[in-house]
Amino acid sequence: MAACGFSSIVVRRARLSDLESIYRIEIECFGEDAFPKSYIRRFIEENSFITLVALLDDKIIGFIAGLLEVFMGRSAGHVYSIDVKPEYRGRGVGSRLLEAIEDELRRCGAEICYLEARVDNVAALNLYLKHDYRIIERLKNYYGFGRDGVRLIKNLVIE
Image (cartoon, rainbow, N blue to C red; front, side):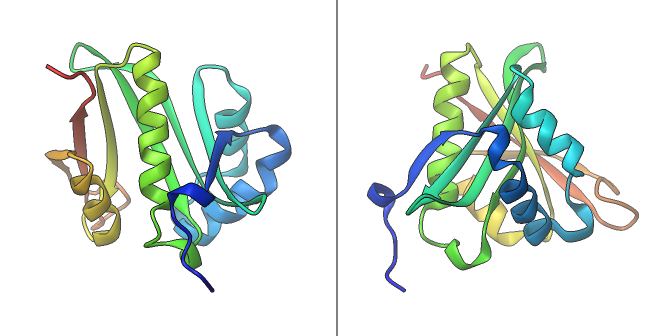
């Protein structure tokens, strides 16, 4: 399988017809920690959410969902989920999705973007750190007893 680069990946808004594909990816990536299908549907249907899919040859290979909120007294994007099918990881798909949602959030007025990740999810943490996120707090038992998380934040406004 040839490696795909940024140029061959298409990112677009998610549609309700993408629900099954997105939900399967969520289950594949997060198992018991996956959002229920009703949440994924909400991510797609509610206008307040920004949900994007990454496609390669018209096949959904990843998605990202976020919401504009207020955090730490600032207009903020909150990334709820970012998933890339395991066989497509390490090829820039996660980076492409993260950059695309940051652009959308900036256009909506977000000054910062934040998200949470499990402390043992090294691949995700490396992705976020590579994109200038910084850890601001540890979240004890965030993902269930004995499964801590961390919250990361990034400034979206060029100062």
